[in-house]
Length: 208
Image: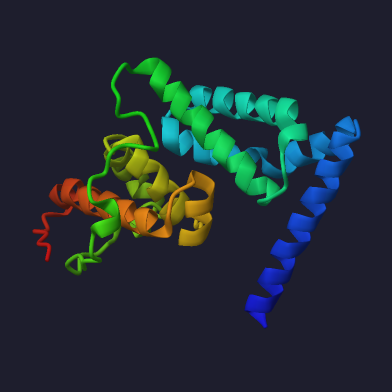
């Protein structure tokens, strides 16, 4: 029953989003303001995890909403509005990083070789997991620093899946990746985070 209730709530939100989108397309500015109020906090959270700077995150979110407003008539409604909005927010966050760095690493589309050919592997049992650490306020700064060292293409996947709680399917849709690619990048992100975090806990980490 809980699962059905959650699905119904998500469906109702999607339908309500589309009603507001249609109103916006017809010139209703108040409807767009409702969409902004509905999603601005979550977009700021995602942007801040990607940029690691609140001011940069605020600018990225502002740019994302401006772009959404300008391009709303181009939204084909083939996906949920929230998916489209999150994709634009992630891209604007990465653009912010790109302005700060001249390196090629700031991209979702990094060349992760043999990504589709990777076979799933199990990490050694090592607690706490990075995703669990993030929910413990006293350890967030440690993980935040480690997360900042990840390539943006890995960082974004980790943020959406393990911090924001998106499903693999939702993450793939937002980032325009295959689910196989999402799983592969998530494995790499977790692996690299555990290597970096092990020194804080004096735990030897082995991998199969």
